[in-house]
Length: 95
Image (cartoon, rainbow, N blue to C red; front, side):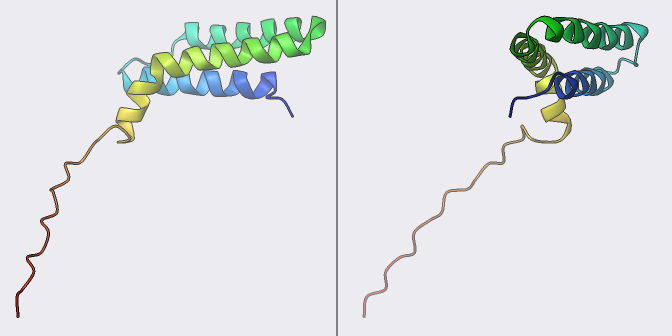
């Protein structure tokens, strides 16, 4: 089963909105209009070729993840790397 254009539109709008909030920018009219335009264009493309619309939707989703992914991963703590202390081997005791 292929990834539908509705899923890619909703995920793209969610990622862009959350990424902008993480950067301290409010939700703007441009984001809402952009999401609407994406949905409209994917619907128009899917009338001609559904596979093309699905792949184009995934391309836009990948671009949104590339743009806003690092900020979102940092916000949830997924980029924090803890230092691990090396484990010292126990000394063998002689009898």
